[in-house]
Length: 215
Length: 215
DNA sequence: CTTACAATTATTGTATACAATAAATTTGAC
DNA sequence: GTCAAATTTATTGTATACAATAATTGTAAG
Image (cartoon, rainbow over all chains, first blue to last red; front, side, top):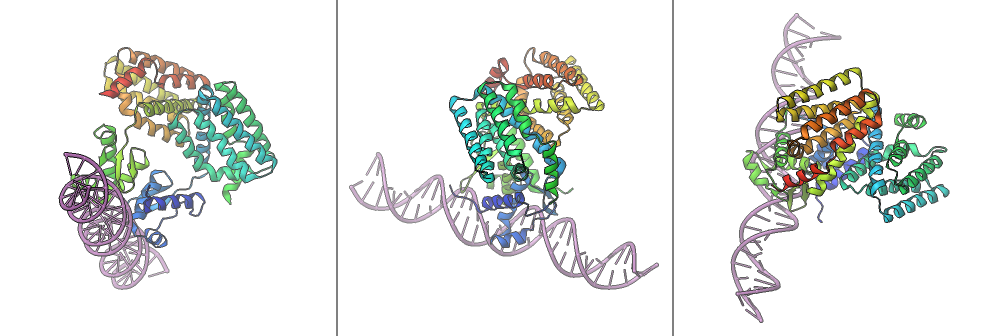
């Protein structure tokens, strides 16, 4: 599976946009990037198309492409959409999850608890992601799963901000348990409700997120 | 707002893929397309990136790009995801829809009824789309709205197949009324339920869709 | 000093040229 | 005649060259 230079560049640029290396509205300079990547403008331009298509940048004809960092409003909208996608996955998973899937879920939750016991935030974070991914998978709808994974990926940097504050992790674990038992009980509505409120950003979470955006 | 040649080409190719002009697995020939559009390979290749990014084609390095028409399974998954997205829009719209939004909805439904009275299937189809779009808008979440619009657009050709068969339109209208009244009553769960089952493809609809795929 | 216009520069968009790799075809051994 | 290796051909990926348009600077009039 040969990789094209352009694809690798697109991936790298994506990471740079995610990590906040480029701020909102900043223009992506073809020539400068071509130099940096030791490549001609062509693969850079092809990489741009990928960024633009995924909404990470905007292209204005004859002007250039400009990175688009989501503002507070769009961010909230994305989180809300994520909550609804998760709820949808959960509702379907409640009806379709296999015994093996439920075991994976229990294991994933176990790993979260372990990380929490060790106060290993980084590991809790990644195990938590896996926990949710088991649910996406459990929906038995690979199209929906892909959508959920995509948005999860897009929101990762912001989720990272909001997870590590006092009491949040314990509460998060409690919610996980509620989700797990609802899934075991195959109670679709309960799963959807639990996941929606687990993911939704409001109250204190909202203020934390807004505060962290300013930095 | 100058348009780039490559963007226009991407749009055209999208339509060609949608309309079934290209079948699944078919390779998109750069040179042939360059000739057809009277253009060099460069803008063709840039257009390809757009198609690939939106999942309409797959790119295999050093091999070419190949159109990806959804098979029966993926199609069902997409419809199911659409149902969940619509339910999500509806649930939010139930809480947020303005008086003006409700009026737009009533008007859109009125137009559907009118088209149905005239037995104008084409118009019913487009008015029906507008009806749903009012709900997307009603969610007051432009990110979610965009996702819904995107999938609606992607599913259009298949939806067209399944709408025109005996009795379906009358039933569809009845469901619309249920949706409208639930929205007026601001009953989020009821709206979500009604929209989900309205959009879901199952039973007779499923068989129709499968049958039409073979042609 | 400000404004408007002209000339210059920079940057994007497209065409062509070249390089690298995969597909196809030919050739030769068995 | 069949299979395999080698050669040719076709096609993709990248670099460069050119064209078109937008941004910038400079200049002169008021």
